[in-house]
Structure formats: C-alpha cells, structure tokens
Image 1 (cartoon, helix red, strand yellow):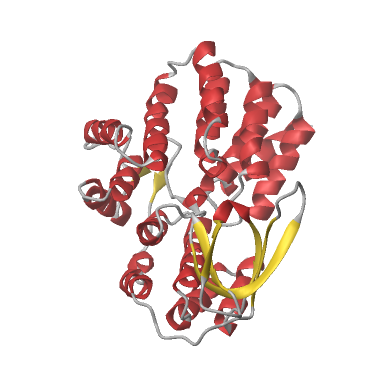
Image 2 (tube, helix red, strand yellow):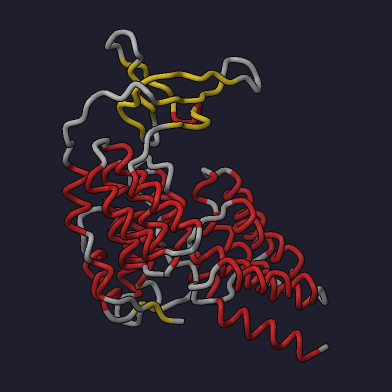
Length: 348
C-alpha cells in the first residue's frame, strides 16, 4: 500500500498558523455552560460562565460576577455548551452527513472568524478529522502539528496521523516527511519517521530518530515513538507470547487516547502467533472503543474480519466488511473490504 496526496493538502497551512497565534478582540461571552464532575460519585455540577481558555490540562472560566478566574482540570469536564458561528454549525452538519470537502470549506471560514483561541483549536481538530477521513496524511500532519504546538496536552491526540501499517509514502507526502524528519520539533520528527519507516532510503535514520524520541521528555511522544519501532518486530515476525502479554499490559497503562495504534500492533502480533480469536478481539477495540477518522480504525475492522474468517465466522466477517464500506467510503481499505466480501459471497 502506498500513501499519496494532491496539492490541495497544503493550502491552509499559513492561514491556520496565523489564526492559532493571533488573538482577535472579542467581547466577553458569559453564556457558556460547563458541566463538571461533582465531589461525590456520579454527581454533576453545571457552571454558567465565560470560557477564557480550554486545553488538555485546564478549562479556565470567568464567572458572571467578578473577574476572578476558575481553573478546572480538563479531566473533570463532562460537556460544554457554547456558541458556535454559523459556518461552524454548517460545517459540523456537512461532516456528519459525509460531505467532507464542504465541511472543510465551512470549517476554514469558521476558524477565520472565530474570536476564541480555544475554540479555534477545536475547529482545527475538526479539520484534522476531515483530512484523515480522506487518508490525506500531508494535510492531517500539517494541521496536527499546529494543533499540538498550540496545546501539547491536546485532548485530540488520538487524531495524530501516524502510520501503523507497512505503507510507503510517495510523491508530495514523501517530500514533506523528509522535511519533518529534519525538523527541530519532536512532533514533526515523529510524523516524518512514521511515514518513512519502511522507505528504503530513510529507514535507518527513522529507526535512529524513533530511538531518540523514545528517550526524550514528553510522555506522549516517548510512548508513541516506542510503539512505532515495534512495527519492525511485526514485519520481521519476531514476536513471542511473552512479548504479547507484556505489550498488552503496557497498553493498558497508557493514556486511553494513545491506545489505538498500539492495539493495532498487538493485534498484528496475535495474527503472527495465529491466535485469531484474540487478534479479532484486539483489532475490534480500536473502532469500538477508540474510534476516530484515523485510517487505522478501518484497517482494524478489515483485519478483524480476516481473522474471524480464518476461524469460520464468515457471517461476522461479512458484517465487518459491510461496515467498512458503509462507514469509511473514502478510506483506502474499502476496495480490499469489497474484495474480501465478494470472496465470501462466491464461497456460498
């Protein structure tokens, strides 16, 4: 499988960069509602306020009376109700209906006019999702770097456009990945090394880069770099039962938003050991529990279907192939799912 993109992917880079750095003047908005966890189990508290900032660590709010700011841990935030611009609302509707290109146009308009920096980050995350839905790693990578640089603790870390299969980048994305591999920012180097990991001319440098990143500050990048290196173990089929048990324990200790790619690697390990039951169950954790527009979700459904087919669960496999076709219309694995489904039909 090869990754390739069109020139459309780089059009929004400069406008988004400027918008995330700037802070347009805006009048105070005290119409926000934040629902947070209470002090007792299961209790909730609704706070009416102006959201001043919201990132992966804290929500900063200003109450209607007084100018004192309240900082609420982001992990305690359950839901937020806040105003959205018309382009933002229209973009969400288009995205939900599967009109990704239209959604991108509306989100781009929304991010230009949105006065709140924290909300611009939320819109940028939606733009990353749009690019991932098209398996456009260049656009997704460019946008995600801006999002991560603005908020390294971003709750949208599950959208990081890392490659978990043995795909090979080519064309414009390969050129960008080479640049990222030499970037001073760790997040850019991680993306570049992921894309070029099995590139004949850069695989050694990528392995060295991931080894370095696995030892540097920043828990998220360190863990993801370590799991990226295990793709080499999968390709060489150098996996023991002891490895798989250890890997599963390590995944359970990770931040939930980081687990999708590592679960894919673990599922591949079970396939190598021909433990098809566990492989299918592991793959299915990604679309069922850690779902996003990331192509790894569709790939996990495909590989889960193949594992189920190997143990004679053909109807269950067919359902997964149909789900890929219905949910991931533009993903690169859709044609593979159609082929697997046709083979099942032919065997009846």
